[in-house]
Every structure is written in C-alpha cells, then in structure tokens.
Length: 304
Image (tube, rainbow, N blue to C red):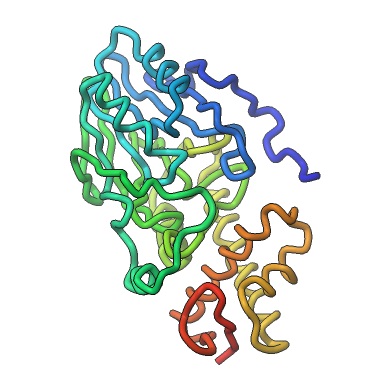
C-alpha cells in the first residue's frame, strides 16, 4: 500500500473552492492511480471568466462547473493538453456557455520528430488515454496572451508530458497542467510524452520567478522552484539507474522497469515501463544508448 502523498488535500468533488482572489477550483469526480483525487478545473476572473481544463466527459462535472459560473460570463475555455481527463468536456461546456475553446493544437500537435516517427511506426500512447477527437476553436501559440475583464493569461508551450501541452501564466501564478505536480512525478509516456522535451520545459520554467503552481491534479505547489529542482534531479537519478542497469547487458524497457521500480505496485508497472522507454529514447538522442533493431516499445537497448 503506497503512502498518501498529500493526505491533507481532500477537496469535495463538484464544490467550487476559492484559492485566491479571482481564482476558484472545482474538482472532477474522476479519482484514479493516474489522476489522484481527480482533475482540477480552474475558474479565473470575476466579471468574466476563463475556465482552464474542463476535465473528463462527465455530466455531473459539467453541471458543477455551470453552477460555479452562475450568472458570470465565460469568455474563454483553455485546455492544457488533450488527455481524456482534461479536454473532453471542453466542447459540451463551450456549447453551454457559448465560449471558444483555446489550446496549442489538436491531440497530434507539438510532437518531436522522433515521437512522430514512433507514432508512424504504430506505437500508441499508454497511460491516461488520448482525446483523439479534440479540436480547439482557436490555437494559442507559445508566448501568446489572452485577456478578459480583470485577467490576462500567457500561453507557454511546455511539451514533455504531452506534445500539445500548454501552461498558462497569470502574473507569477502558473497553471502547469500535468507537467509539474506535487503528489507525483509526471508520467512521460512515448509517443505522447517526450522526456527530452520534458526536461527542456522544466528548465525553461526555472528561468522565471513563480509564487505558486496550480497543477492538473493535487494540491497547489507553494515552492515551485524547489519542485522543479526535485523533478529534474529525480529524472537524472532515473537516467543514472537506467545506464547502470544497461552496464550488465542489453535490456528492454519492461525488464529495466522491473529491476529499477522495485517498490512500484504491479498495476503501475506499465506506466513505469513507459517512463523507462522515455529515458531510453532520450538517451538514444544523446548517443548514449542504441536500440538493437528498429526503435520501438519492445526494442532491446544497449550502451554505446
């Protein structure tokens, strides 16, 4: 039994909680090992509203968001990324409140060349599930601003957990989606997740000063700089463990995960295997390892 990483974070699903002036959170009723307590939907603004990450296709959650909106006007619906726990409710919500959906791209956008190669070869995403039908009304480019009455959000393209992943800066507050979370290290599952991009996105966020991160799941992150440091250090330690294991001979991502993630519950080993695959592909890009045969999920890798 894994220890609860955030025992004090137990919001009630469907209830709008005020986190700061002009900011409320509504928790979706979709708890799971991958989503923790559920997906956090954020309402920014007072006069008019931006809604960040409407969440899964759940009618109860839609009703909870509409109840939180009340008589206010929604002018923008923003989606951090096209996983099924974040984006499917965007279209039904848009139809209800008559507001456009903004995102970086559809579900296939933002992939690196190697991840597109893996996709073309037939590798499909593992983990949280891709909302393959997601299409925004408006695309937000990296660095683009979106404003409403009393709020301005800046889009930051932060791929790594997902190719089309955006974070949204609200002054020194960041809505960071699933790139950074306080309760767990983010899943990086090729071809939708890309560890090379993930590390670059974390380091990019380190270049700015932030007061708080509001993640897609879990409690607010009150020390963003420390969390980013931890995530990068954690990933570098995993990289070291992969390289150390490969010193004994060629191995697949599955066999490496079984030897490295010894404390991981069996139900989470497939996700751990995808994380190891992400490290192997990153190391391949750095010319540290090479696949024996075609690059793919089941390939054996050896040290160069």
